[in-house]
Length: 82
Length: 293
Image (cartoon, rainbow over all chains, first blue to last red; front, side, top):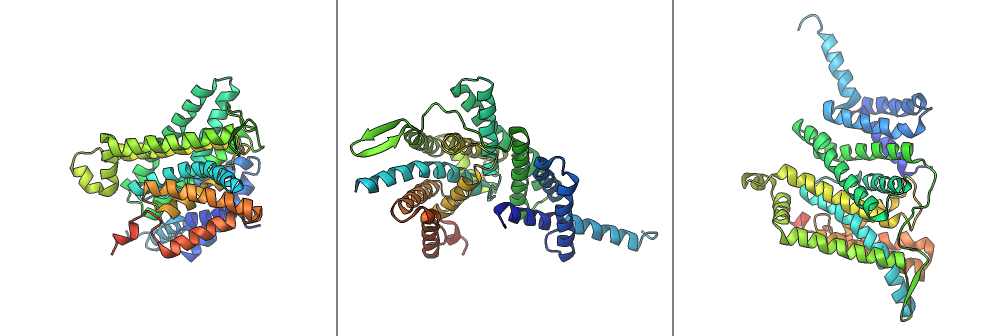
């Protein structure tokens, strides 16, 4: 059941959620489950979506989804006074 | 004895494929310290490109040459368009390795989308069933061709790396990047060329493997993992090591499959790898871990 592809999918989840953050892996897992559902009409395109997301995240947002959320929270915490 | 030689010969022909894949991986690793997880998928993309061209009634030689160039251009484009921007933003080593995994996923999806997931037979000028006899030994035209091409590719790579100015620049870049830059070597172009060369070797292996297996978007996954293991067995930063590792892996696999059982084919090969790495963690011909003290 756990093929090589499966372990790659889990790895993708960790990368997209954000390396070294527990909350991130939950978000990443949600992403990895959501994408095949949304793209169920184009099954072959699912790895492409994963790959493009990895490339974009690693270049522009190395901390992943968790890092983005963290920054947004920090911004709104002291929102009017910055 | 004849049987032993027979298995050895068929192992050498598989080993030549592994050696080509391993050479590509070692070439990239030793110059950029990146493990290229997209190697198998670049190879698949190149092979599918050749398959499409053959479907459009191209003759064999131009189709294969175009496929080799296509693979090389793909790898170079990845280096220039993705890796260099990532390095500008100070991506970590792990980040760059993960980028190659991303490229692999993208290519895998695109190949599955445009090429179709069903298995197809790959037309090839050398036949799998035509057989030559040497004494008591039997060898098919395809395996003979694979061996010859593998040896030729290794020889050409040796001449390129050891005897030309370009090879000198490549060796300098892989040994010490800042020093090479100060000496006026265009390191970025040299590294892009290493990527292209690695993809070229990979597609070459894919073209000779496709007629033996059947063509589908995942046909390179197992040879890629084997080539990876072969590169580690020989020492990841050594080019001769990659060749030796590939040949050893191929022969060990074939002998185990022939004399013990087909089920032990992979087991014995990887047992050998584990034993070698226990005794020499840097691989058979590698020097990596000694320098680091």
